[in-house]
Length: 515
Image (cartoon, rainbow, N blue to C red; front, side, top):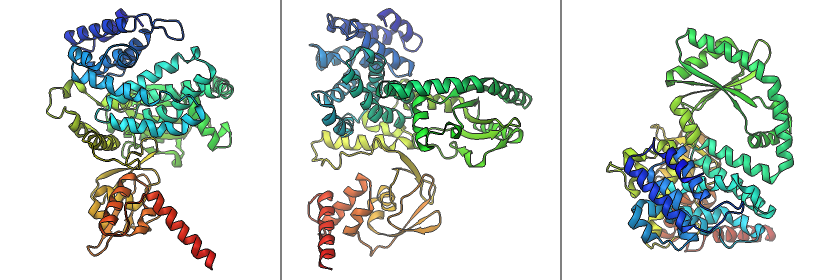
């Protein structure tokens, strides 16, 4: 990537004065990194220019792109943040500072075995510290993607270390931001270094299978295209091949049996409106026999990361099993680029909501975890005493949506219990809870909630929290609220949750020993 190429790529997307700022940033970075080389032998400036190019592709605002160009200058050169702020403004300098902090978290950890168990904790703490602006995470993903693309120049140990961290931290992070295409790229590259034999073997299997099915799928695609045209539904139909790493994970679930993988290659139908999505689904089911258990409506109930599509698997008269994904162009854009696609920074710049503390106002429901990051970041910056327990944000786990009886949506980690929901709604609701109805039926305190559950909290003013509840919450938010209430009641002292559980288990063992 050269300066001229990057500017050429930027011009269609930004104002003339913004492109001039970008050009100035490139000149500053080029001078700052002068004489530095990558492991490949290329001038170092190639890396930040490539990161900035990726950010342009993702549709990010000009401050993010400028920060992408400058992201290594403070850490690796004599440039300082005050200089960057004077030249490019507070926002760009703030983003560079955030990316620098995330990078520094990983510095100095040479031993892979000691490094990896701490990786998620260290990075999540730092992401909280920079949680005022999610663009920091997006820039870091672009940085990581280019490092993976050039990983062949690193030593074997470094390759393994970076690849494993990418699978365990950056892949899930991209997924949480709804950035499906980025997640897939990160996973594919990382897996190819972590288990090259398995990667090549699966690549060959996919190649052979696709050769057999592509012609058959072509005939199905042509048939669908004619029917949709006849029904006056404008649609784009293309094929989607399952990624090697996704296939690797799915094969583990089906004992390695490739015949149980129905979605190796799917047909994707992209239409203009949500109504057209359902019309296409009806047409497919009138033409072919649907496999009822494999019909998924992610439009009515999106995935926790915001992904929306209709999925169905059908059996053709020729006994061919075909999976379809049906979505609108907007849904497709979000499925590919996630939060980067939904953050319209150009429009927000001039709005009253465009402040770091109010960015949560434009975040969709499935991004509530970012709001949590922002809340804790505010406490950290105001000098509040934050415990390590509070810093343990559920950034990397799978998420579920649950609903209140009024239809309000709440985002919780997979495995969350009813009390987690109650405390998320309001700490007083949790405090006075005495029972739960889930989908109309009474549910015990220790039974996990599932995606799409409707949860009603039954409360009594006379009811108060109990110490035993500490074992019936899973989220940091609920545990912190509950512990504060128990302290107020004098039920527990300031001992940690872990210590409370150990103490409780010790007492149980002593009682059992006496028996």
